[in-house]
Image 1: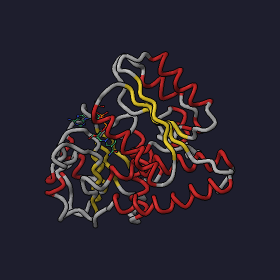
Image 2: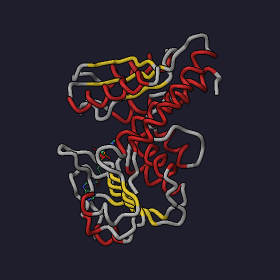
Image 3: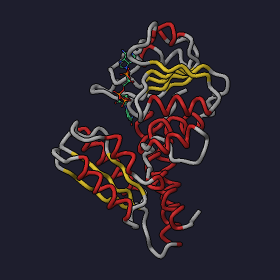
Image 4: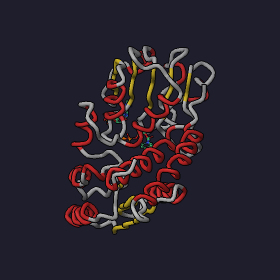
Length: 280
Ligand code: NAP
């Protein structure tokens, strides 16, 4: 089974357009607004931000683009975030990762008000999610969970192996799978015997950032394969061509996890606006 993130994200956008229209109607014409902050001139980051703004437009939401110079300091970025936190027209804040090295990214993420943390990047949001309290999930792993739920992939009691432990992907992914009653193994660059650990996995999540790093032969027949990676040439972090025939379900690259990340971001912005205006 192909876990078609592109199709599901499209269906979700249709539903979001209806919810945005309902917000407009009940709030006297207000539109949910996502503020995007792009620091520096990394072309890939600029593309990601543009894709997120386009998604906002498709569902009738607004986006407020803040672009800052590559020499921006932590203090300057914190001041921008403070301003957006106070701005009542802004419902969600996206600080595009990564920011230039001189900036304390963690401090800046954590300055985002919890109610506007629609990309799920704050420590407070992560902690609440981990404890099973209400919080916006980190967009990529939350999008993966939405995809797995949509295709009714059984998770309870399954052994999930997550390769990668980054704050925005691997760590929250592992925690969400744990919350879904998986037994979770988290692997990283110091892990020993990675192929053997992956061979035990009922569910494999590749979040490594290296093209086709996880080999098809490491993955057991019938596993669920989720590839968060995307690299030039249209390959992910997993050697998908070698597993697509043997996996019980798998995410294509592109068209699997990527669209679900953006879908989650805009869904959570709509939820934030609904909460603000008391709609829904
Ligand atoms: P990251 O911050 O670079 O983290 C990579 C992780 O992989 C780290 O935890 C690292 O371990 C681990 N790793 C590196 N080499 C390894 C090795 N030899 N064996 C086992 N683990 C190893 O990357 P990220 O931001 O989490 O992104 C991961 C992938 O997801 C990338 O391909 C990225 O493009 C993709 N991504 C996609 C989306 C989307 O919307 N589709 C969003 C975000 C990211 P250490 O912690 O020990 O260094």
